[in-house]
Image (cartoon, rainbow, N blue to C red; front, top):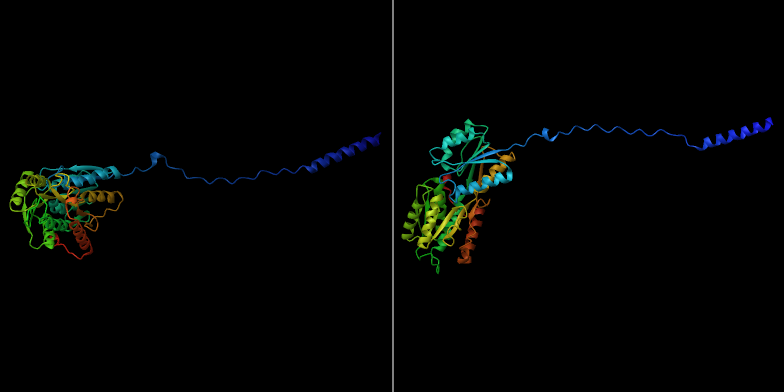
Length: 362
């Protein structure tokens, strides 16, 4: 009996040991490396606020509503406000010439980052004012002013005026055009006699004489950029003297030139903006100056940190800063060879083959 119990215990113990040998030994789970500590992300409230730049635009004589120079500059300013997010303000004055220094100082003291003046006569007060406000950048159009915080914008109006004069010289003796007479006479009316205005007239005259050395170019000055009645009077006088095309370089005064052209059944030429639509069919073309692009470009450089004082920025035919209008209302009435000649002259000016006089650099 004892032997049987012992045998039973030995068999049972053997089975238990066999079962234990078949089970794998448990291994501890691998230890995962600790995730690197991430830097704390700033909350929205901690983000530095984007700077909103402030830009002031001082209008020139004639002010807004001239459908020319000032309005073109304002268009560029509005585009900068919409697309670049700058805060803008237009500063007008009944006497921008006499109040030049006051206007510039007031704008600088109001905290504007960039003060742009469209008034040519501000070159003298700007040279005095700018050094007093080193943290303000100033920009002036149509003349160069020295200063570490002054940007000068120069347009090569003489180049595009040359094209306008060349076209006028061809059209003035054009046959079968009821708006011209057989006489080779054209005219130009400036707002004030100054290098900035004579720059247009000299280029216009050179272009006309390039086509026809015998063409007569009349000139006069209204002494105002906001007197349409005077513009009408001067233009009618030129038409009476045989001119059939009058180039206006007089801002709002030019509205009177356009009126005279319609009354006399003659041509006018617009300036700065595409003014052909004002009197469709009576405005031969417009000498466009992209003031809007220049103002926008200044604001863009400010926002991008690329606006550098002491620089002179030039816009000519090559840069598409000046040119003639598409002549929407007159192009189909002109011979194709006239338009081809204008394009050829443009290419020659860009290449340097034709040198147009810039009297502001003499």
